[in-house]
Length: 398
Image 1 (tube, helix red, strand yellow):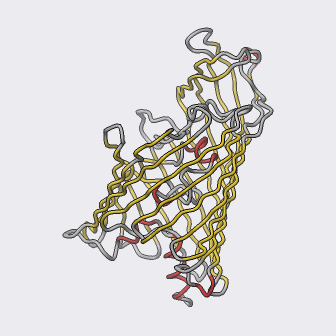
Image 2 (image 1 turned 135 degrees about the vertical axis):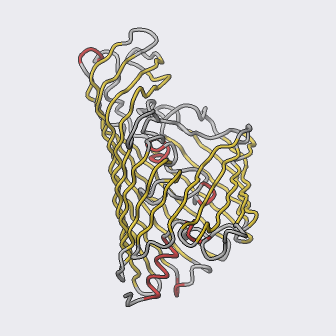
């Protein structure tokens, strides 16, 4: 069926979700258990709680200043029976408490390249979204992921994928979920609150080059979505409420090069993603005061491009450029004098990192960034991070 078995194995190893790496090594009687420890230091000139200009109605994951314990991640994965396997990832908050990051079941015997996942999972849209935080190439996510997806889109629902039986890597996917992750609104309702479509294609070029490209579509509805401390035309910080539809399209592309195909020694990875979101509905301005409602629509977008070069075993360096566009909003007549429609500012950021991995279980990283995402508040940032993996943990995309 497959003319090039090496190509199939290589593409699957490079681009499949990390969870698949557990399948051959864990079973119902001996589950793979792992614990990721992370933390470090963050030095910033500005208050990290200040959002990017023009994105005050979006989430702002931000950073912690000074020494901090990052999110610890506990994972367990095992085969359930010949038809299913399960994966759970629990996030341990430094301030206390445990949250469920992933908890899903996957089919293992559908055949014909078909796979069904159900439970809580990271959406398959884009390139970075499925990667857990300890697998990121930088301390933080690109700006576009931070403001449009609150770092990454998580969902409760169903994901169906098909891997085509072809020499070229072709993957198609569809998701139906509750809509709990931003920009959706978790609400009590029957049926689906959000949907995703995605397609990925890729191939090898000789033994040294490989590439992957993708397109994604996400649709949901926001209901009583509250935004606090949103600046208005008078410079006041007010609370707004939005009800309406949200649709996001995305493009992603990755190119990888390793001399003689030996990525353990040296490799170069260049990737870029672009997302464009249109929201249309009703905005209630200053719900604690005037509470004026009228129509509101806006199209916002963002992109990044980054490159990571492993120049010696264990040593890497990377550079990333981020850019956002807050868009020109269409505001109803009742709120034309209240809501800012044009911020006339382009948020950007440039980031450099270098990291060292003594083994596959540990990594120490230094990151410097010049953040110009907030108008009139340029911020020079420094981060030091450690990532340590305990136990049996599956491999990641390279």
